[in-house]
Image (cartoon, rainbow, N blue to C red; front, side, top):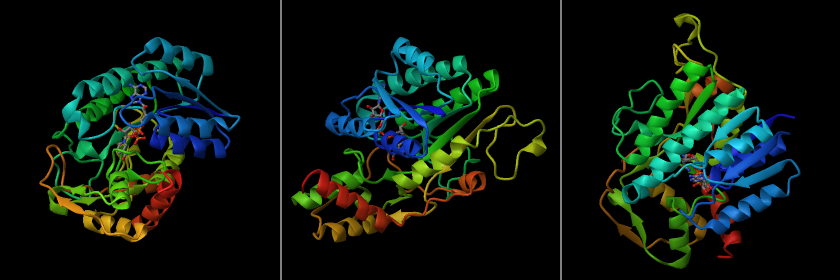
Length: 337
Ligand SMILES: NC(=O)c1ccc[n+]([C@@H]2O[C@H](COP(=O)([O-])OP(=O)(O)OC[C@H]3O[C@@H](n4cnc5c(N)ncnc54)[C@H](O)[C@@H]3O)[C@@H](O)[C@H]2O)c1
């Protein structure tokens, strides 16, 4: 039985990924600091659900606490590490950049050190579509230059990609960095738009809509996203021997077993259409508070998801109306709303 260490296992994506891996016969070792960036109770509920599975165990600890992380890694000897724990959120990085420095830079370094020492088969880590920053050429492809991060969050994730490349090169550590595009679905994050919009609509309170609603996002349904991660676990990059070993469209490094892969729906949806879908699902109209663009925000994201498909044969495709339906159903049940 293969063992996967999942950091951020009480988080939105870590929870869904752990569930899928358990279903597929992996042993999952979770690690999460249960930070209070958002309601800790939902994180506890996610862990409680995972703990019902005999092949799941978890440790509460901060990534910055190397000794705890290291002891866990040595004791459990995972074959694969999927590193999802991070200080997430674009907007909060304006308020509290140090949280990003600590979790995303020091924390990720600690994970990389454990992966190097254990010589894991594959290290996979979360980056974000935010690294595309001020790029305007759409859809965003992995081969684009990403040198214009607009928030400190994006800057830490871009730094993670560079840090990971160096370790992949130096220590022959097969490493995949995912660039996730706006992930949504049941058990989602209370700080994200879908959650706030649904709560506002059901409670009859105004919802803030930035840039007067003139925004586009590539919304990725969480079950699709974790399916992509699951398949990428088996697609560890191999250091190319010659430039010819790098296929057209592959982001494989010429000098390291390293690549970045977008995971997105490959589709851009108008924010107002997304809101209409939530209104229809809730059976109520939103009280809309139109606002200017927020500092650090980008007007549009859209993934070129073809590399994921080439590597795994898989393409996320849940239509956003279906994903919104699943979310609202979960929300109403969970909050008895
Ligand atoms: N959800 C999205 O739309 C999205 C988009 C792009 C990238 N990402 C990235 O995907 C990953 C998972 O995101 P998510 O949406 O599940 O977020 P999340 O906040 O729900 O999950 C992250 C988990 O990490 C834990 N954590 C945070 N800081 C920690 C620390 N210093 N030590 C230990 N644990 C810590 C938190 O308690 C949380 O449970 C993150 O790296 C995030 O940056 C998410």
